[in-house]
Image (cartoon, rainbow, N blue to C red; front, side):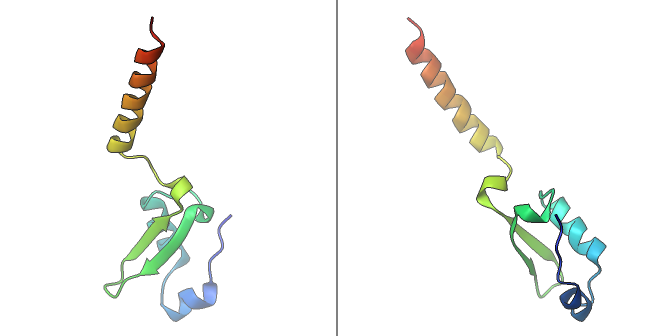
Length: 77
């Protein structure tokens, strides 16, 4: 569910569509996944996702694959 502070958006001269677009471009599919969104002095919107909702990196997947390989190697007679 999306919840935005519309008076704050008006005060900052931001459109809801711009904020929602920035949030989606940075990996969130809903506002519930956002830990914090910040408007930088340059006018960019930066988004920090909640840890449980952050996307996995290639490094994360490689580490997981290595752990699975270790487990499989132990279980092979």
